[in-house]
Image (tube, rainbow, N blue to C red; front, side):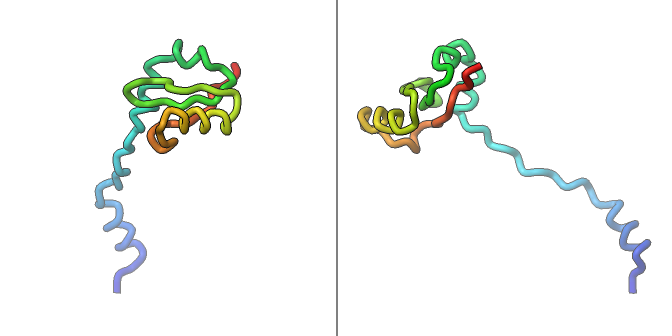
Length: 86
């Protein structure tokens, strides 16, 4: 039977666990690359497409979702977020 000391010794020889790579949403990459464009929508809800950027902006989530619907798109096609007022 292995002792606690022996088990701890074996565990100490294991390579460190690796976290799986985090996949970053392309729309987040767009947001970070275009801070001046995002700043135009301070305090508003926005829908961001990873290639086209901000495709809709509205003061409320309900209005933003209505705008996305008017565009004939699905909210699943965009990153929907709030731009900080500051």
